[in-house]
Image 1: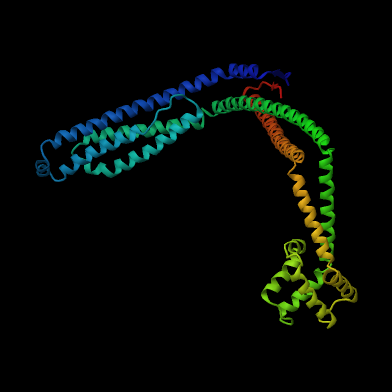
Image 2: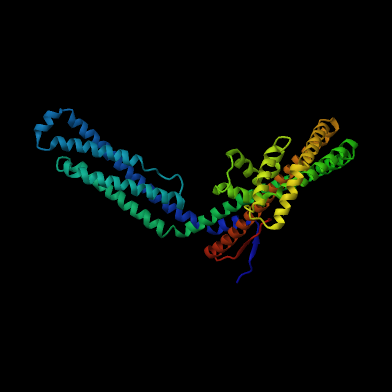
Amino acid sequence: MKNMSTLSLTEFQKKFEKVTEKKVQKTRKKGKQIIKNIGKVLESLEEEAHDMIRKSKEELKEGVEVLAKKKAGYLDAVRSLEKFGENIVNTTSNIKMPSEITHESITEFYKNLTENLVTLERTKNKLDHKIHPYFIILRTRAKGLIKKLKDASDALKKFIETEYIDVENIEKVYNELDAIKKLLKQLDNIKKQISSLEHKIDLKESELEKLKLKLTEMEKQEQFQELTRVEQQIEALKTKIASILNGLRKPLKKFLNLATSGEVALKLEEKEILTKYISEPFNTFINEDNDASKLKILLLKMDVLAREEKLELEKRLTKKLQRVLENVVNQDILKKLSNEYMSLLKERKELLQKEEIQKVINERKLIDEMNKLIDRLKSELKIAQNNLQEVKEKIETTVSIIEESVQKITGIPLKLSLEL
């Protein structure tokens, strides 16, 4: 094997074009001649069609009644002649000649030509017998030209399927080289996009660090420390209240089952509040009245059921229920915790109105927005990096196809070198 030459894209294309130029020019020249011949046939056919139309119009000047009396079927023949001519003109005007000779253009032209030939054949078969024998010369010339057009179409088909095959393969390489250029341009744009995104991310991360440092200093202020303490107490109280209420969940479910089965009578309102204490105990309690009267009523009824052993609770759970009942109903532990919780909420609300606290809140919002922006930019960067890899893989695949095709066509081993 000859030593493989490594060439840049421009050098590679020039080398390939130089080696294949004569073959392409020779084949396209023949294709151009075939197309030219078809064009001449179409021109002749169109001229014949205009003669048909002109002749029929001349005949029709005598008048329909006169023509009808001349010979049997003569008027129909004149009209059919005109219609045949008009159909030929309309059909040939639909055939678009290719502006250049390529496999794609002549294949498309052949398809267009054959479709319109079908229309011409159909029209000829429909009207031919009506025209004959009155306008035999015009009819014969038109039929001869349609036959000639069909033969030219067959010649074009044979040319496409045999002689143009090699040039078609050459054109495929041209197309692949054009595709490479587009991919390289796309690759360059993606690289620029990646560079821009990385720069933006660096800037935004630097800004984020400054915001965080500023926030850290702001959070050291006494007022903010007080807010932090209040929020911690709120969370601790919330946990304590929720813990007490969560301890009631299993007995409450037992109670609901008894109410649902009809073993225990409960008002609709009581049943609704019972369901809420099972699904959302803390929120239901906080939204109750100050005495939590609805919960107390439920607990008292449950206590009766527990003493009557209708709840079917384990001894451990029965004792737990009694302790909760003592704390909630008799000692009002939950009420005290609730009052303290509400008091802390009020204190927090007042603290949040302070200017210094608002500055901290706004700073946190800025940091949150900055984090979201950075995440979005990183997501865009990831997509761009994936796109870059996909384009690189497409380029590598296309290069392999080109190198293989060029060696097959020219017998010369060429290697395409690209900067990726």
